[in-house]
Amino acid sequence: MSTTVSDRGPERPELQRVIGELVESGFVGVRLRVNDERGEWVGGAGVRALDRSAGPTVDGHFRIGSTTKNLVAAVVLLLVAEGRLGLDDPAGGHLPGFGLDGRITVRMLLQHTSGIFNHTGELYEDGTIVLGVPWQGREWVEGRFRTYLPEDLVRLSLSRPPRFAPGAGWSYANTNYVLARLVIEQVTGRPFAAELQRLVLGPLGLTGTVAPGVSPEVPEPHNRSYYRYPDGGRERIVDVTRQNPSWVGAGGDLISTTRDLHTYFSALLGGRLLPAELLAEMRAPEATAGYGLGVFAQQTDAGTVYHHNGATMGSAALMYGTADGARTLTAGLTWVDDADLTIAPAFLTAQQRLVDAVFCGTLAR
Image (cartoon, rainbow, N blue to C red; front, side, top):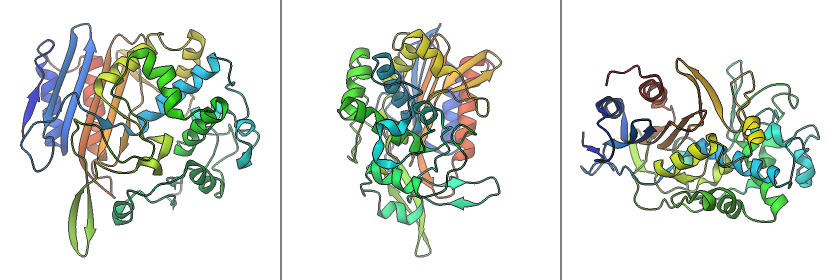
């Protein structure tokens, strides 16, 4: 294992130990940024690519998966602050072409309480799996540069029965955020990327965050992501760093850096981005999963920590912060993905180990 550690910040051997253990559990590369009362610590473990011995870039770009949803929610709330729309507006009033159930509100989209079928597929309580767009195995690998229009993703979802009546339950669905982004574009008449720049990236001085649209590129520098699948009785591992993310759309297509995610989340939670009343709306959790408007509220031994993590093919982001934004943890991880989501247990362990180390102080220094 090749390991790199930034020379910035205090000595934090407990953090370096944790990210080293994560690489040993199966991750190709880990980069971590922690900001707290001890200062800023940045480090990395693993390798940049499977065929190289160089350590991972600790300040590079990576696909952030569903962490995207938090930034989409922030843009919606900033438009609410401008009076361009209301949280309790019927979403269909802004998107009349889809025939949405009139009871579905903008708030329900952001909180995953609309009941809309998830275009990337659903797992029902009885174990039944209903597929959506391909995102696993050889089919996804061979089609990973295909372009999906957001309107087609929505129509796919609406062609399937809803999971429940609007507001009657909670179910995580990427399509909610595809619709939320379409609402943004409809009420502003501008592409989402332009509104993200105007309302979030520009005011906060963020230069490493990209809304790629249908582009498969990740800006340099970056670590590599991989996918493993069976092919003709043999196992193949392919580099999937380049991929068209339109299959997930606004549910998880953004690219960022640990630096940008820290700056953004610290400003958001610290009240420097949203008006206080709208930040309170964002953080108010729904009872089932502790999900607010694009953010989870997690209870720890040290109090409430807010987060929205995300994962996509071979790449993931962690983004955590305290209520005042004074302490944050942001991380990017890469690995060899597969249809069985083999990395999932290690990913859950990674989250808990890092939360314990940064927010609860349960690991020895």
